[in-house]
Image 1 (tube, rainbow, N blue to C red):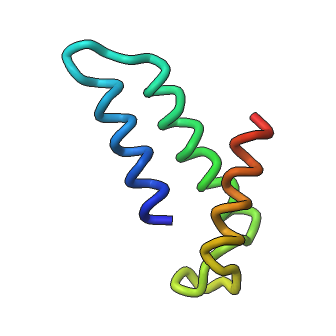
Image 2 (cartoon, rainbow, N blue to C red):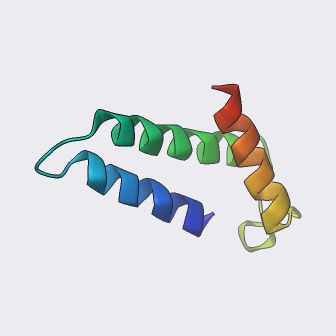
Length: 68
């Protein structure tokens, strides 16, 4: 989850540079929302008290991204 959110942070940074990029801002928000929705659905890795592996967690986040 940390690496996925790090990507969202990089996109957020890109969105707020001197030449703002609204597509980067939208992508950043979509990633954060997908991660939040995945965790809210109870899909968590072991370090967060869940049983999903990193591949399953990432797949769940990608599924939510594609659904939006």
